[in-house]
Image (cartoon, rainbow, N blue to C red):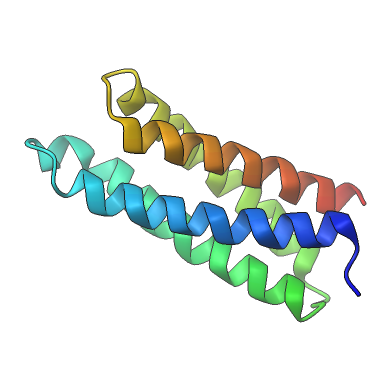
Length: 113
């Protein structure tokens, strides 16, 4: 049985990955895709890292804390970028930024647990 903190982190990593993939896909449909390039790139990096983090947490890896630290950093960077676009009315970026912040917080809690 997993602890509530561990399960929360796994769930939020998976939710963040899904939000990032959705955001990247939505950004590709925007009129000025070039303006979205950094956001799309960070979305894809963040999604990949969140999925990997969730998997290592499930496996009770000895590297979980290291990966959680990197995951929190990338999630916060992705959230920073998405928040810029959210201010311009891009709802998918707002949703992604929120998911990234929640995931970063959960990863930080895992490290301190």
